[in-house]
Length: 81
Image: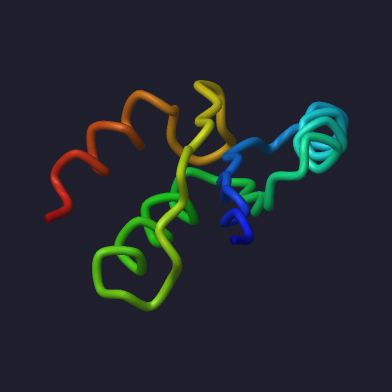
């Protein structure tokens, strides 16, 4: 039986850090999707709830983002049902 590839969403706006994470995560044989803003992360979670996007196994959320900080993103995500 073939194992399901785990999916990770990385919310990070710094390209250098994104490249490092992306390389390491892909080397570990995970699927990765990179989002570069808090608003995109909130939109992605809304899409997951409505079934428009695949649910990830893990979300890695940066605290310092260009639009809203990671704690605000986390707070908004918790409100989504």
